[in-house]
Image 1: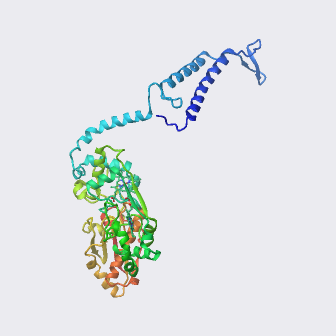
Image 2 (image 1 turned 60 degrees about the vertical axis):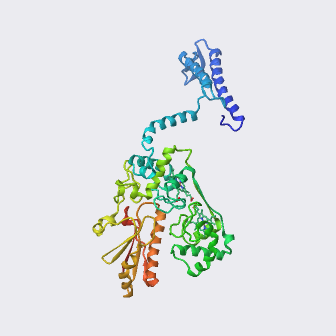
Image 3 (image 1 turned 120 degrees about the vertical axis):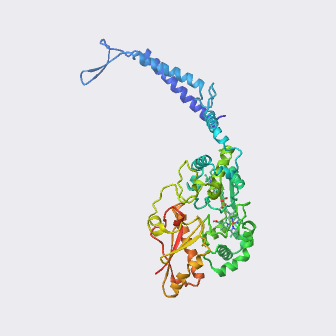
Length: 454
Ligand code: HEC
Ligand code: HEC
């Protein structure tokens, strides 16, 4: 097998290699045989500074010897190893073979470790600290560049720590995704939808599915056109794992949020590729990676030790818990203030009221309000009726992508604003205030919106 695409290059390389060696030989030969006419005192006749003369001595023997050895060495080397264009050398050595041998050797060394995982189901593997430590390293080296080192994803690269799946979150589905890769394809369907106005209307209908801010007149006009989308996203908009068509009702936006983003999807379509890993990993490694990814969103089942809030994420500990960042993030507000005395905050949406401030907590990556939000906001609503203003500020935890987090903080604040409006508070009595630092630390308490009266 030759790496050359044209027969010119092997010849060119051989010619300059052999030409170089012959040049050396020629130089040796010339300098060994040619006699410079010499003056009677064995100098060449060159004189510098009036007194400095160049002697006409032969080359030192050791130097000539080295030259000869070099020439012989290169001859032997080029005979044994590939060096002359496409000639493979009599030993048939190649970089690829050497690499393959080393990989095989490495695989043999780790085989006993993987053998211990054999026969374990994916949930069992997700509980095995050694398997998860390996999974963590495999993930960091191969997946983190796209999905983020906390697997939190970013625009167009899905978050693997939540329960929102394009292609399904069962162990089998995740295994299939990693092994054979996935191609998420949405064709541009604007023509099927109708006029550009129809497209905007349908976009507002899609926004209405997740209770995102939308124009309700447009949304009701757009509803009729959603049939085009229903083929893939389902008539209820909840998506279809077989096609990788996302749930449009959950307020999680992989490719951007808002009317313009959705109009873009409809007019330009999408093609999003998750590479296949079958040829890179052994079946055992694919299982470990599947268990690692599955464990990220199934931590109750997956990680007994790491279940506690703020669990550390060092390589030895299995850390499928998504929320804690691997670094000890300074969280001044979250830990120094009276918050420390409050009840601990779980991973689901919840509510706490203290000192007239309503704190609404959110699940990772979500902007959905807890069911008790209405009740908790009752005092705020009364306060507004008494002439005060409601101030709404969104915070996020420090895991994940900063731009995405900022977007999330905004969406959470919008969700609370919409809730207040639904509870009868006029929009001009609600002040959306961006906090100076939206990132409020690494634990569940950081994922919140605060509402107070001013
Ligand atoms: C080159 C970037 C890239 C790399 C590297 C990559 N992925 Fe992905 N991955 C993607 C994209 C893009 C998608 C979304 C595909 C789609 O939109 O249908 C995805 C989707 C996934 C999904 C499906 C998510 C869902 O919601 O169904 C899983 C699971 C996944 N990747 C795991 C991995 C693992 C494990 C690795 C490392 C072995 C990895 N990925 C490496 C880009 C990447
Ligand atoms: C042929 C199947 C198909 C049809 C028809 C289709 N979609 Fe999609 N859509 C997809 C797939 C697949 C994706 C996800 C691509 C990816 O990320 O892998 C997607 C993604 C989206 C997204 C991005 C969601 C996000 O999280 O960012 C939006 C919005 C969307 N579609 C809206 C629509 C609307 C509105 C229509 C109808 C006008 C429609 N789609 C019709 C298959 C389809």
